[in-house]
Amino acid sequence: MTVSNAAESPPAPSSVSTLISSTPTPATPYSATAAQVLHSLQHQHLWTSLETHPLTIPNSESPIYLISGIPPHRVYTHPDEQLFMLEKGLRDEDIPPERVFALPLAQGQSWSLRRMAAVFDSLSDEDVEPEISEEGEKAQKLTEYYEGRKVARATKEWGGKRMLLAMIDKGMGGDGTVVYYVIQEGAVKPRQN
Amino acid sequence: MNTTPTLPIPISYISGNYYIFSVDAATYLRREHHICGVLIGTLPLIPQQNVFLGMPLELMPEEARLLVEKGVACIVDEKKAHNDGIKSLLEEDRKRYIQDLESQGLHARRLQLQRQEQSREEALRKKEEKKAAKMKKSAEKQQQSPAAGDVAEENSIVDFFAHNQQKEQGSGSGSSSSRPSSIMVDEPYGITPTTSYPPLSEAFSDKLLPAPDVRSSYPLFAHLHSKGYFMSPGLRFGCQYMAYPGDPLRFHSHFLVSSVEWDEEIDLMDIVAGGRLGTGVKKGFLLGGAERKAEVSEAEGNESIRMFSIEWAGM
Image 1 (cartoon, rainbow over the protein chains, first blue to last red):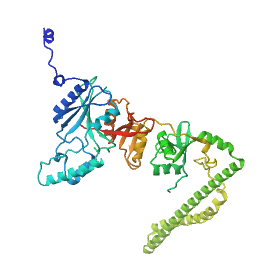
Image 2: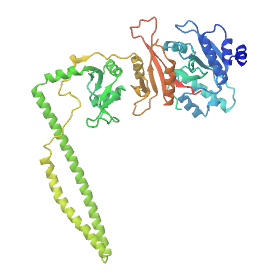
Image 3: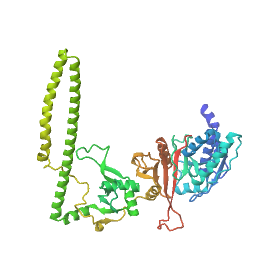
Image 4: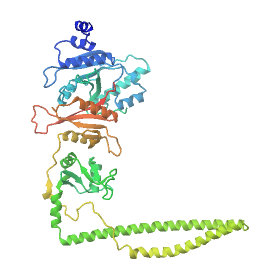
């Protein structure tokens, strides 16, 4: 009795599966990976204003996808930047979160230095002109911080272009885990965590 | 202290490895060219002692090549140089060399004896002074309380020994000053030279080898080295190199470095493993390699280096 019941009504697809099947066509392995990562960023890490950006890379028929969004907290602070903020009396949460890019990758996906470099080349290294919504002393500090950051960006003192690598495993151990790594262009000294 | 060896420094190529045998050369390379190598020498009698190793210095092929390209060093076929050198050594040279070693040994022996003598005299002098001070003190005490019999007795014992010792010292110092020069100086210390130049001549021109063959990771190695990083082998962290921002004696390393070729397939698990391990030991994982531009002819060393630092995002 129960067996026939199960055959009649298969279990409802998971929300990720629904999401993947509802993503815009053409559905490729890359778009499915991107959808899963997007789901994780949206619901597990509570990122907002999420967007996907198709990107054509060398030696690949179908485009890969970059995801960008605004995280609730700062994802990365360079050690020198941290020192600068400390000197100015700014905390991580004083600085409004900014748009961060993430590159979804799946275990087993063909990947090379050439492709990595192509993705980085497609990122703009221009500083987004920030709007300061605070007032008074804090606004002053933030202005100083943004000026300092502009200088550091030109000299790459606080690291070059950066994004998140979001990696999933679709095979064995494909348990929905997404691991995130910060990847930056150039030799950027490690954080003292 | 800051001796500069004659350039180019000979790097000895022995059974597939590259060695530096001269201390001056090793310190010079470390100081001026940020090449540390790995010390591999241990003590012949305690070969298990492998915590503090000494000369010789073994160089990675990359390090050897870098030095050759800079014109700082040359690769010498050590086997050939040694065989030829020994064969061409004249009997006269040999004798002179042995004599030279002997006189060095004698000199070392004399210095050692002199030092011993000095420290002995110093010790005796101190003892004497102490004794004198004590005697003075006890004499004062006796004057203060002449009635205390046992104290007087004790003092007399002390005096008795002091007297004896003084006697001994007198005779001892007399003989010791004459003894070493006559008996022991004749036996020179055995000197073990760390290099074989001299007696072999330093004319290497016919024993030179071409710059070492290196792995495809060499461009990244050379690039990081040119940025001022000190590079060392990466066995300890399962990577190709470790990059230190300064001398490894003063700094922790910043990066675990792995090199990949431009179109080499990267396994994402390697990124996860390297990134996670690096972050766990407060380092970054540096993945990089030489960029290969499609249109430009590849033979022409027209390469630029692309590298990426990876850290765990903690989310």
